[in-house]
Image (cartoon, rainbow, N blue to C red; front, side, top):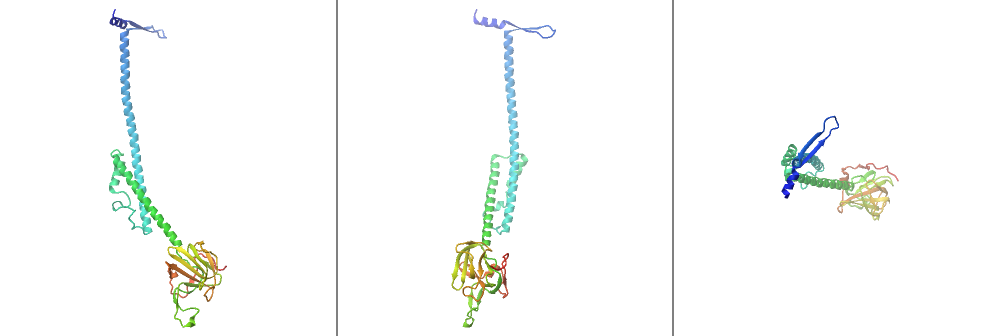
Length: 330
């Protein structure tokens, strides 16, 4: 007997399956050949594989669909985030322009914006952003997204540079204000103004007059004298004619001189602030009585102190009174 006959004999053998229920029902007896059993096993295996393939395909579809929905939600959020960023930049640009107008910097166009996009995005940028929001981001390609993000980044850099310039300008103006001698150096009566006058000591010498390079303010001896601006003391000591004298350098080419003091309270090299008491009024040097000789120098030349005080110099009855200064006296 060859192997063909043996194999066929095995397939023709019967397999009996006996099912005995736990009830009064009769047992079930099923009988089928090995060939039928192998056939049903093959059919079952094929159906299982086919069902697995179908289910796998549907699973991939639903996973891909879910991923697309998540991606679309992220794109919508990104589009809204871009819109919010644009709105913030628009507010920053408006604030920037208002500050520049307020600080007289509105003509500085070098770092603000180009003429095609002053104060914010262009019309094409807004149209593209609107398309993003309405279309859910599906109709926008990657290049458009990069364009929008690059535009926002560039606008942010411009706003940052502009605000840095405004900060620098305000800081510089604040420093300039504190270095400007625009307060009275002491309290008293203005007895002599800036300009030509008769010499108060040699009136009988027949001279036509002399140039007075400062302002004289008279008061009781030891009246307080104040620094009229922030600065550094460049000289504190005796000088012929001026007596006990103080010179303060305020920067920006401006310095002030305080002469005829009875006593100096600061030393050379010391840093002083506006309104700080630096000396007492006296009559040292070439003087006819207790008073302060006050000068303002600009770029190496004496100028009229009244220009800094914004007071007319034509009146003969000016009264010096430092704003916020304490009462005179030691």
